[in-house]
Length: 278
Ligand code: PAF
Image 1 (cartoon, protein in one colour):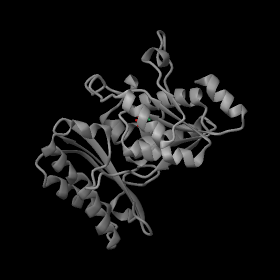
Image 2 (spheres, protein in one colour):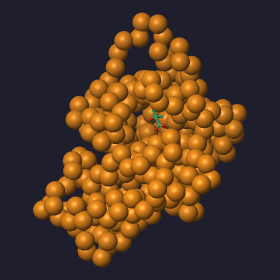
Image 3 (cartoon, helix red, strand yellow):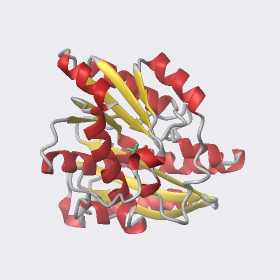
Image 4 (cartoon, rainbow, N blue to C red):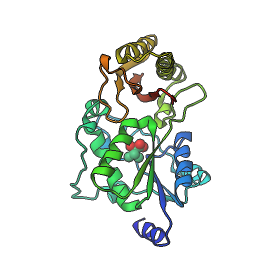
């Protein structure tokens, strides 16, 4: 992959990179299409990264289907698919990890203390291997995207990190490979998450700016669903993810939710600002 990347760069073409853990869905495909728009050659990686899963998490059961992924990635415009093995990425004696302070230990990082260290380590390695000019990440994992941006800036990585919008199912559920774990009944219950975020959005559009009131509205909506167990509802600054206090009355905020539906852990978020909401 490094050799191919070098050839591409020498021919004066820029690489657009979409790192994934496979089991591609429309959300990933939208990132691949965006990478096509932003660069000359699109590389997609598929690697279920053990370093970002805690021992009690779903590394083993994480859905995998490489043949289907290859077909979908190609149809969306991917030219090179990079599928390293665990040994390629973490050979015996591997001992280097990339850790971003601050952002990595709040919200997702508080509940999954080793997660972001695994993400930043593998993304740094993938950037060194694939040598992209631009890398595209999805806004559903908004904290991950902010952390990767921080890493790229702090470590002077020569790559532009582009963050693309969340892709949702027609009924509002944010697309995720983990949605496949949901039973049909849980899938219906899970809709409470996007519904709660949309509710906050309409309150915001009506002029509500009090972070606590918006947070309470989201919590109330989620509490209406017996299957949804909330892990956090974060009303934060969209760049630092620092929690907003009552008197902050910000015109731009990010509301992020993590919740379990049955055993499945889902995350979602919405960016609210005065002019546009997404
Ligand atoms: O978002 C993901 O799928 C993963 O965290 C990533 C960025 C591919 C790193 O393993």
